Amino acid sequence: QLQLVESGGGLVQPGGSLRLSCAGSGVSLDNFAIGWFRQAPGKEREGVLCISSSVGSSSDPTNFADSVKGRFTISRDNAKNTVYLQMNSLKPEDAAVYYCAAEPLVFDLCDLKPSDFRFWGQGTQVTVSS
Image 1 (cartoon, one colour):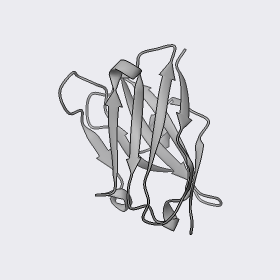
Image 2 (cartoon, helix red, strand yellow):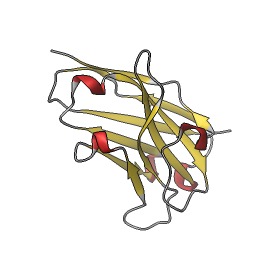
Image 3 (cartoon, one colour):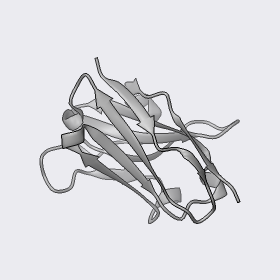
């Protein structure tokens, strides 16, 4: 059974950077699409970035929300069974609980709908404030 654990959240000033990690255990993440989602108080959970199942190429298909374009990137380290979310130029509106999620065997471009992902981590808090 796949288990996901997020880490790396915390308090950062506007304009700062954070790198979140999503570590998988029990199963290799290679064959899973991994998505990062966030949920702010009183708002619906929204998709941020996702990366499709690894096909062993140098770049697996990724999808991203317009609000994070040019600021956030997603990457895999298959050796560590971990997916990262690098967040740069953070804004106060990026503050939320960030979740990673996994869905097996998604080789086409992944979608950013929470309902498309079956396995979820517990989340990590990101606060952007001066």
